[in-house]
Amino acid sequence: MIVNIFPIIIGYLLGSILPGYLIPKWEDGIDIRTLGDGNPGTTNVKRTLGFHMAILTGLYDCSKGLLAMFIAKEIFHSQELVIYLSGISAILGHVAPFYLGFRGGRGVATATGMLIFTLAKVAVRDISPLELLNSLIYLSFFTLCIYCSTWDENFLAVTVLPMVALTLIFLVKLSSELVFLLGLISFIFVVSVMNMRRLKMFTIKSENLPLWRVFIRPAGMSFFFLGMAISRRALITLIGIVLFVSFIADSLRILHKKTGDFLSREITRGFRVYKAKERKRISSITTFLLGVLLTFLLFKESIAIASLSFLVFGDMMAKIVGINYGKRVIFNSEAKKTLEGLIGFFSISISSAYFLWLSNMLPLWIGIVGAIVASIVEVFPFPVDDNVSVPVISGAIMSFLL
Image (cartoon, rainbow, N blue to C red; front, side, top):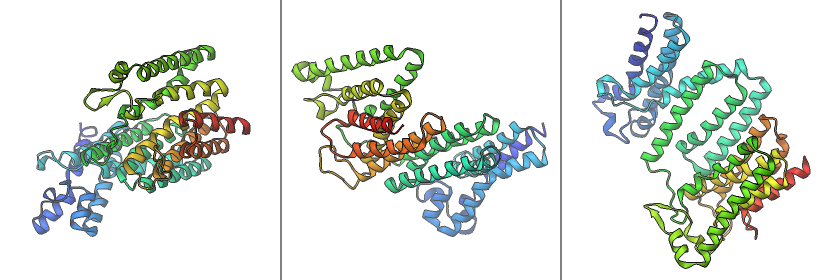
């Protein structure tokens, strides 16, 4: 009991000590929960009570999880699972301190402290210097792109953390430490998403863009996984059938008014299948499927995956960043492409090239060239829909170079 239970209890007690609440309360009688966003964490302390108070808060909040793990390991000589649970218990203590009615901070600083320490430990032990250097260059580049295009710390966490997790999965062998790291990353990711939702920092402002159409795009990559189970001919036939059905629906919607009104209307509140601007034209669903079909018809597997990754993930990021953070319009066309959206597209396209390189599917330099070409094609007002032009042109250039 002493070895297994006490370290977890100590972790909770250490976590429940909130200097952001206790110090202002003792010194000035100020309840930090009545100021700012009501969170007794480092960010709110900085905004409401100043930088010096935030330093004290941040130092302890970031280190108490590590302190709990140190006590479990060095004093109680606990098993590895108990050590990790002690750190998790410190997060729980921060989130739900008993003396504040179990309503405390969000635990991100505590989780981040353990994340950074464990990341450094795993990186030094399991990742070669060259792999580590490459990863740091890529992650630094991606972080810079996202932050400079959004200036939003929560969005930065939501986008960078999955890239860190993917990098770890590629480079670090499966172990309890890797699972612990992925758990911490997932926790910080969820809290960041909740913060964005709570502060209403992320909304789709355009009524012409159904939200589900933005996030359904990655489902297009399922064709690649289907290709592992069925033959190439069967895959192309399947894509062709889906494309044909979508084209028929578009034709009926355009040529038959009642059908068009039915398919274009809002089915439930906030949900419609087609964009308002697609009422009299072929939908981007159909042009996307055409782009997928041509990509699988024209290119070998590695090139097809890279080209579709640029289109699927790059376009999704461009829309999200452009709609929510876009300020500098590049071309005064109907699409109103923004510099911020372009940077988002490029950052994800480079990410696709990087992870395909880690998978030994495509040389990095060819993937980077493809990402640059895809970004140029996506932003310039070509007469051909970018659902077709982006994968076909970038795929053609990469095929020529390969």
